[in-house]
Image (tube, rainbow, N blue to C red):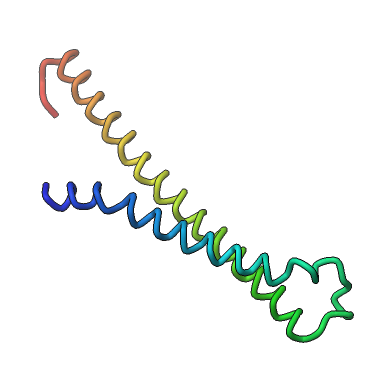
Length: 101
């Protein structure tokens, strides 16, 4: 019970910290590539190419984390739905037959 309470209190704070960190990283990456996006790849210096590669690696990592978070949330939702269905079936089974299973 205590662990659940601590989790409920700490989870939003941890999510907020992660979002702030990701936002700062996104700002830095966008600022680095702001002026070089309109040039051809071959015209860029090696440093500029590395900045663009770093930006797309960050974008890929960020999207992957968001997908993992959505998958986690949906698995929790599925667990709740299955629990509700099984509890509902048990109640319905008991009402119809008068027996427990």
